[in-house]
Image (cartoon, rainbow, N blue to C red; front, side):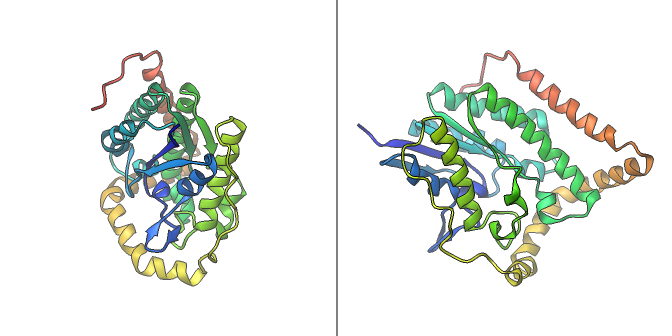
Length: 282
């Protein structure tokens, strides 16, 4: 009998950024793999910077070739950081990815995620548009996870979000303790669903949490480049969005922005309802 196959798809979170081991990243998925079953073949296809388009067009075909028993798809934050953000496209891509994996018989793991603006501590007028986008993605992930029978983790909520010890120096990715927390929570859900038979990952890290000085050093060095790369793409659109936030707040009509976003999500999900035909994946 072959070992259970676990394949992880996604971006830097699943790649393991924030949880260094030797000269590589480990991350929550690798920590989880050790506790799913006595013998597990684990493959991590996640790539830093990936969007839903990358998962659909690049990672999915590789995952299907491996014929996984369990597949995790945790993605979406990078979509919200692009000027091309389109919740209709995000929903359609996720539906195709989830459906293709489930059609092949894989158990599916998904998660909703915190908004990056809040984690970075951006000013309200800049943070609110990003938060609204992330809520839209999370709503879509919730709905499609239920539709496809996924094991879903609500990682966008809980005390762990405000616990500085959970996060790496960049303030966007979990540190070792945070990755372990994700692995522990996923393992509990898999055990409850009868899909994990191995021991739960340890929640205790092997390395100390990064200091405040380390966080400031990251912002002064690598963080500057990270922000610059995102701003080149996002800032031309984010500034008008922030201006709209200020105008609506001054007029007391901020609820209109939330309502517009809700309508867009509802429209995106309605467009998928009853769809039986999915494009073939090469």
